[in-house]
Picture (cartoon, rainbow, N blue to C red):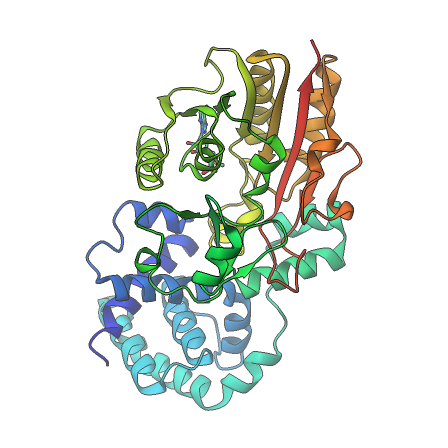
Length: 423
Ligand SMILES: C[S@@+](CC[C@H](N)C(=O)[O-])C[C@H]1O[C@@H](n2cnc3c(N)ncnc32)[C@H](O)[C@@H]1O
């Protein structure tokens, strides 16, 4: 057992059990300190092991089924899954198998299973690594696959699953001089102006991080502010602002930004991010449903199912079950109605969600237009560098999907539309 491996593997098992048994989200467990006692290297390793297992879970189960007479209890299966995925990703058999046996042995109830775990994982190490690559790309669970196939078709959903399995590189948004920073950071400049870094290593050690010359933001997530096209001196409300990627873009454009979020803890992240980027915005802790004021433009990045972010959050299909969809859809509509009341005449509102579900995007806009005769869709706002015409939807919004840009390595799923208040 290598000295640094055990804590990372132990922590990865803790996180896996949290997601797969208790249906908790990784970000929640990490925010609550699950990895605080680890070294930065072990922390990164534990997260990588966990996300590798979640991305490859279906393959691990299919492989393990070849060697198991019956599936053991979930906590034991998670040890086997963790070992299997690490072995199939090239982990050294001795260290992986030894640590998995030790993890089982640390719980009195599982001690008698140590022999089985040793035998099964040794077989995986000897025979399973080849077949692993031939197993099908893992599918989304039925609660999510069903609605996505209805919306986009089976072929598109297979493309999304491929993108989810591949995971995501790190995208950044720069304050200025995107091509100069792409060269300095050895990244690639994407058609929409974001920079993609394939193997960035320790992010805070990269040039420009300390001075706030750039911030982490998926290329898709950088587009809603481009669609809003903030102008210097405009009064702009960022209605659901934390952790603040879009607030930074708005402030960097010279707008007079009010950043509002209901969560005090998350607003602290906005403040930290503004400070690092040497930008300013008025930070308000409050409810988007009751906030008052009059603004030239509003960005509504509403709470949503986040189903567009599975490339980076492979825990989501396991931690959630879709039961919160209806509540979120109702909240988005209520927020949109209130946001319209805060717009000056002639003002514009960008609604966006990191969701793959039309009910949280296209349908929201269609229904808002029916409820508000003084609203219209501004299609010209989508006329942006790198935006493909085929991404523009019937009602005049922009639909982004993980299966788009396969040549660049995909993008997050997102929806956005620019609405103008005529009176
Ligand atoms: C999708 S995230 C926003 C991401 C952010 N715009 C960014 O680019 O970094 C949604 C945010 O909505 C906030 N939120 C949820 N309900 C809210 C409410 N009633 N009023 C204000 N903010 C709310 C959450 O705390 C969360 O930070």
